[in-house]
Length: 414
Image 1 (cartoon, rainbow, N blue to C red):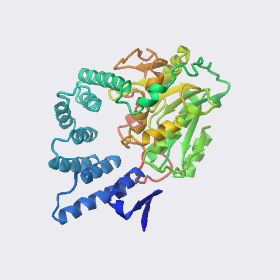
Image 2: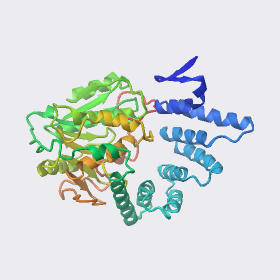
Image 3: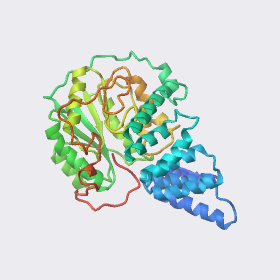
């Protein structure tokens, strides 16, 4: 007899791993319940709960954005294995995301001793120092993180090392196509959208509306599944967006990758990849115009103290032929990657950055990493709003203006 979890058959012999299967399928609430019950059962039996169960519980709470509960689970794991570096890093991340910046810095600074190229720690410090009003330190840490990631990408530490070593970097080095404003369907702003969280649904509709003014000559394309309410899909289409229906995701965070399909669409000449929860702005539009004029085949934007990633998944763009077929590479990455909410950006780091490093324009306001440039002097956003900011920068809270009731969801839309 076997139990089935989201397409995975789990035999009785492996049933103790079912929390891991639930997590991998994106069923985070059920995974949290399993790990919680498992740790309680072990305590009742007079045994010390396994560190792996505490870790699974922490990861599940983290995916549900219950960072305080994740902190508690990590502390319980550390009580069993106090020298576990990965757990300490995880603790720092959770402290940071729960706005406990001083506590996070204490954890991170301890971890940085003797390992100054740990980009997870450096990213965390960049975020915390900014929020503690120590912006010079934030910029130093963010730049060091980018340098460390770049060095790792071109080393054997890269899980894509075999692919990168065998790749022909001169393949399809055609000139970037000229921008054709009269054929908007060839210029696509690509999004992923799923679930019923109005924060993302509202942002999607607002961006479809804004794009008609900020990005004339472009078309928004939303990769959606059946979890998106019909009324929202209707609104997207009413504002001129194209909707591509996708099958329900079978893996956690799989939907984040849908928007990358635009890179391999032969009908598309130029594309931008964006987040639904981030408003389109004139500042980014002017940066995109500079990219088009540059003749480079890929575009990267970094405009905040937390943007210490080589390629931000929601602030990049490219042209036809700039990238190989991404699907088999994504499938391969899922086989070796830690599955969590930044898996799409880590994929871009390991697989895409080495392909475009020498053929991109980056607008990078704070770190000026590599050959990056600052944004154009005119058309800047207000001081409270950076490119890639969430919608809540307007009023300090997540607005809910779309047409469905907010229901808690295990998955994040982008």
